[in-house]
Every structure is written in structure tokens, then in C-alpha cells.
Amino acid sequence: MNFNHKSIMVDEVLNSLNINPDGIYLDCTLGGGGHSRAIANKLSAQALLIGIDQDEDAVKAAAENLSDAICKVKIIRANFSRLNEILDDLGIDKIDGALFDLGVSSYQIDTPQRGFSYMKDSPLDMRMDKLRSLTARDVINTYDEDRLIKIFSDYGEERFSKRIAAAVCKARKISPIETTGELVKIIESAAPHIKNGGHPAKRIFQAVRIEVNGELEILADSVKDAVNRLKGGGRLAVITFHSLEDRIVKDTLKLLAQDCICPKNFPICICNHHAAIKILGKPVTPSHAEILSNNRAKSAKLRVAHKISKEDFT
Figure 1 (cartoon, rainbow, N blue to C red):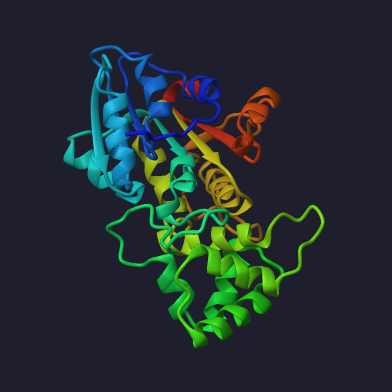
Figure 2 (spheres, rainbow, N blue to C red):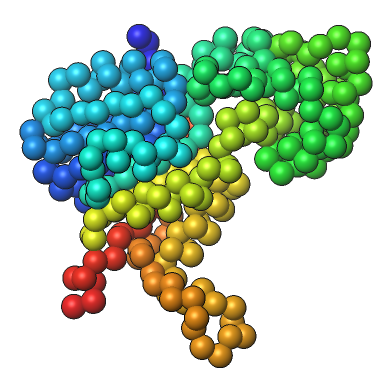
């Protein structure tokens, strides 16, 4: 399978995970296995690498990519929201590290029939997991105008959400909107091009993709689940690509790094909340050289957290 996806900040991810050669590592967004291959190269025959992805094509490509890894490898087709269930099924309590590389892969964008790209005319789909029933076509043709406005505004941060939603609803009364090309023309007719603002279809496609795949609603809980599964001293690495997911990750890690979370006006602590992690430094961004070689890396941010252990208090 020609699964083309260039993994981002591979060296930075390896450094952030502080690899234990005999450890257990969880790649929650396996993709074609680029990051996992780099992690596996640092692991011994006693180690275990677990890869999760909901995309059947990604699972097949990763299995091929990792077929000769020295370490033990388990690849599971699933959404990362099921990571607790997956680890339980494998009889694993704690892990040494976990990675989330969020968003859509280059393979998904560049494969026209998947319907992720506004630059290629194809059927409206956008499902990362082809077993899901909801498609982009369903969202565009069946959601009422108010719901479309909310999705375009909340998930796409599109200033012309009302105009675009109205144009979509008007067009679909004539005939169903079937392709990405049709949708792009409707968006272009409703939203003016703004200098340095990027193509408005980019934001709408992002919004619809997030809705189809339920990307944001599972993110905070999944990050918390991964942290809970880390051994003391274990590491969590999360790569984000847009402000919405990055804000969720940032706020979730900040919460997990706090002790008391009672309202500030409480005279004494009653929450009994204790910090689970220590956030390591500021977000890491790709080097200039990496951005030049891979333009899709330019918005990436890598956030890293360390699971607090007894040694942190000695």
C-alpha cells in the first residue's frame, strides 16, 4: 500500500518520550506508523509497542511498516477513546509513554475518494473510520441551518458562518450536494476571499470533518485516560494542528498539573485534587527546515507532560 504520510517532529517526539528500551509505549494515532517505527527502533525485544488507529488503510500500512520491528507489536483498529478498554484487554495496567498525533493524515487528504480535501473534487465523505455511518454528505444535506451555523462557527471559526450555511441550505433545496467541488463553489459564492485569510473552504472542511469524526468531544477524556495509565516518570506527548484541539489539550494538561482546583474564594481545599503531571516546558514547534520540507508541519505544536512519581518529591 502506498500510504504517504510524513510524520512530524520525529526527533522531538523521541526526545520528549525519554524512551525506556524495555518499556511499553502506546501510539494512539498510529497512521502509517512513522512515529511508531521511530519508537520501535529504540526498543528491545522485551518491549511492547501498541498502535491504535480507526482508519483501516492506516492499520494495514502500519502493520507492513512495523513487520520487522524487534520489539513486540500490537496493532488495533479502534478509536483512541477506547484506550482503557484496549489496555485492559491486553492485560496491561501501566505504560511508559503515550503519543497523540492529532488531526488528519496526508494520506487521507491526498486520497481523493476520502473527501477530505477542498482542492480535489470527490464524493463528500470525510470519515476517518469507514465503518462510521455519518458522512460529510449527511452533515451538509440534513443538518438544519442553525446547526450548520454552529458547526461552521465553533469548529471552523468561520466569520461568515451564517452566510455560508444559508447558501448551503438554499443550494440543497434544488438538488442534494454530493461532491466536495460542489460544496467549494457554494462556499466561494457566499464568503469573500480575504487577503491573507486563506481559502474559506479550508475552515468549513475542517469544521465538517471534526463533526463527522467527533474529534473534539473525545479528546479531553482520552488525554486524561492516557495520563492515568502512565507509570510514575512516564511521558505523554501530544501534537496538535489547530487552535481548537490545542486549547483542549492545553487546558486538560493544565488541570492535571494542578493541585487544588477549588474555586479561588474557598477558604480551604475540599476537592482533594492532586497534580498528576508536570508540564515540561513550552510547546515545541517544527524547525524552519522541517517546515520548508513539509508545509503541513507549520501549524504543529508538541506538548509534553511527565507523570509525577515518588522520586519527584525526594
